[in-house]
Picture (cartoon, rainbow, N blue to C red):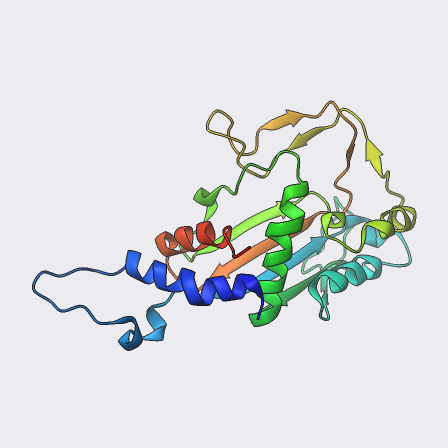
Length: 229
């Protein structure tokens, strides 16, 4: 069992159950063993999505990006296609524009463990998630500037840059941050980086779905950041 899954099932679920329990006067409280499992907050799935507008400009399409996403997720990915035609972007209906994969059960926790222990510490301007973006359905959406933050695929960055005609690095870039910096900076503010940094040539969109309401999801996503060492 993954360490994050062990923390989630043995510690975090029951802690959240206590925090959300409605205490009634002169009423005997049930033990955790008699509590229905449907009351426990759960993580349903994680959706990883890559949108690649450069895919329609070469013969490879989204296949190289799909191969990288498959290495990260550990399972087969699905090629996404355009639903409608957009003349401004020279996009036709049915044209491949990216790829996505849905992670559940063990794959979900392995991905989240790699995300919080390896990927997020590599971000220069990461100061925590903005949990106010959790919607009423208990979903958290955020984006990563580059897929090459994941371990094991950094050596493929130059190859993919050649395939899609990307520039691999830039200096003094103004970048829109998707994470919460501190109380004095708003989410989405533009921060200028003076040092040389890797450009987000292939961004990754992550959506975490939880089987709970918004308030429970806020505590759930907060507790996920503290796994067993």
